[in-house]
Length: 280
Image (cartoon, rainbow, N blue to C red; front, side):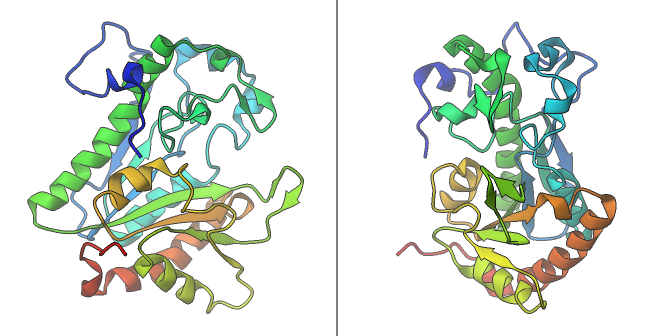
């Protein structure tokens, strides 16, 4: 899944420091690292945890109402990832800025990595964005997040540990007038170990609708983070999508931290999980 064009690849090296930065001294960092010394053999990641935009980027030309929508971030996903990191005692890496700047879960060559339109909303600052502009955004926001994930995985390797990789997202109840009835979707591709076990546990709860690769599929090329960091290294992995109306309040987040935390803790307790899976 490494299809970066040359202009974007040129800034993938963290040792290449640009004289320019889109992140000002009062802006937050490009990623959030939680519980780096957690004891769980798992790493949590959240690509769309934040709606933040640096002050100097003038909200990308959008109004505040647009930035409150799901187009700016996965509503509730960041808090869910933070809660699960604490519940499981696992390290976590969360992206620090809105996916409207650059989508950290896309290959940089994907046109949706820098969306000019998102769910019908025009993003003025992304219209006609030059290759140089894309490269600078990648350097400031995208690569620091992915390098932080890579470094977290390196810490596991240094301890001769194969970690589980857990990606946290949320999805809208409706999209393009289509009803999405699932409460949670479990996304996966090549390795069934974690996703199948998780679906089996969640489906024991009466009334809970669990999607298998719904409303998105883990077999599509859009899930760059899992493909790049977990599947390429044959790590046990799963991507979890919770419906946004269920995690838009602290009470909802707490309920899903408890539900997912209990299920994931049982799965992570299986020592046979921590092996590189064999491709068919």
